[in-house]
Length: 294
Image (cartoon, rainbow, N blue to C red; front, side):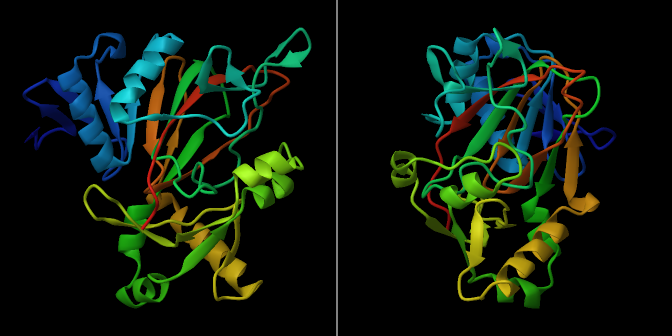
């Protein structure tokens, strides 16, 4: 890999995959790539860039559902979604996020993903990465903000790291669905049984290179094990406030044709609101299976 000291552009000589960081130390925007014609060799390099940088952006894409699934499969086995009613017909791996109505009925989930979280954290093996593909975006609002949890952990004092290293978070899908601000829903017994409560470490180790992430989340977390509430949840709130400082965050302004993939093992994210009486938003979301956090 060759680094140009006079530019933030990086080139992998073997495949001529070029990228620049989304912000210093985080994320990568791939330059001039058409994902419909990407070679297996170049796809492997994109996966390597992704694992190192936490997020991968490719703009100006025009992909059909089969092409979306084919490209993301280079990152791992695709994961189906917990709720099925908003999946694209014939494509259970593609979940529609939209406020669009067709014949008076919504085609997707609206205001999904508002609030700092990591996807599928309520599962024993949370998804490794999430991909969003922008089909239609508002002229203002609906940004996605990411927090670099590895940079946040590294910024902690050694004493603070030691105090947090052995803590465990209790995650609950039932709690999440029944308490969230938007789309609050009482889940049925079948879905509850399929999504039992789980326990994950507060400090997560990235399996590729061993870097540590301050793996906090909101929505699904009911307690920090061993610290009674409200003290435990107050600590969690303090940590979320810490990791979401401007120095650790990147705000993505969507354009039609954007493909953005982020690593749920080392990032926190939230959507932002927009004027849904004025604008239409439509995104396709895909997930890749992950492993048990450690």
